[in-house]
Length: 123
Image 1 (cartoon, rainbow, N blue to C red):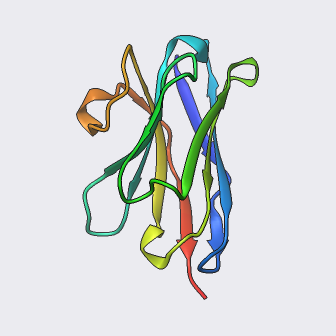
Image 2 (cartoon, rainbow, N blue to C red):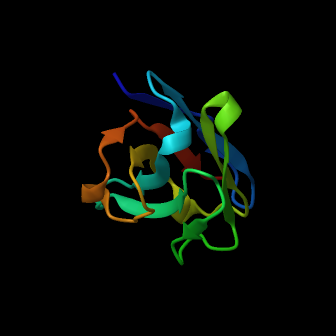
C-alpha cells in the first residue's frame, strides 16, 4: 500500500522559514513525481510545486516561486519543501501527493495523498 506522510509543519512568524518533509513507504519513490499542495480554510486545494522522479525537473506556482524550493532524496525515500519568507497568506494545510509520469499542478491528476501538515504563519 502506498503511503505518504508529511511532517515539519508548525507555527512560524512572518518572514520565517520551515522545511516540510514527505516520506514514502510501501513503494519506491524513485519512479514517482511528487507534488506539494496546500489548502486554506474555505479555499480550494492549490498546487504549489512538483518534482520529477529523477529530481532533474521542478516547477512552481507563481504564488511561491522564488520563496519555496522542492527537492528529493530518493535514497531516503523523501521529498522536501523548503519554505522561506513565509507570509500569513501561506497559512494552510500542506499535502504531498504522488503520480506518474509527469509533473502536474492539478489535484485530480494525483493518485495517492498524505494526511497533511498544518503550517501557520502568524506573529
